[in-house]
Amino acid sequence: MNHDPERWAVLGRAIRGDRERQGLTREQLAERVLERGGQVSGRSIGSLEAGVTPKKRAKPPTLEPTVAALGWRRGWTDRILAGEDPETVLSGDQAAPPREVTPQQRVLELVPGVYEFGRLAVQAGASPADRDTFEAAVQRLLAPVTAGRPAQGGYALASYRPHAPGEGVPADDAERIYGAMERGA
Image (cartoon, rainbow, N blue to C red; front, side, top):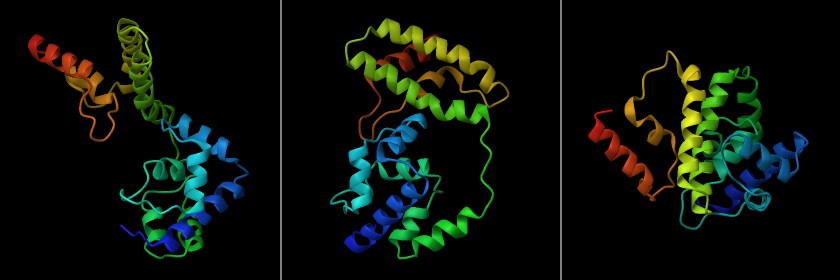
């Protein structure tokens, strides 16, 4: 991973320029990220645009969700950090027709955020039983959306729920998995 401050500054200017070209404030871009199931603050976007070079990580965890919300494709940030001209990267690839996203695809993109919401609500003091009821309703809503897709088996609920890197499986997920294994689900 490139830790050259100048390359990060170039990337930051490209992010800011594209955001401004689209007529978005940092807060509006943060809202767009949230709608796609990610989480980022206007302040974090400001850091990205300022070209702050990461000290330990390869990339800040807010980078890819932010540029994806701008419509960037995978690999564009890597190409800019590797030295390619941002205008070439953005304009050359943007000439391709945009991919049509179906309502089913959008629903599936949002699912991880739904489960993260439930997990965070419990951490904030909500009832785990209420979260379970909520997640059961989500599964009923997903059934017709996922009809015809490969079955997820008895582990579908846990596999949809996001886990932070290095966090491992939350205890309540582990309980559900072990319970499903005992029931033979």
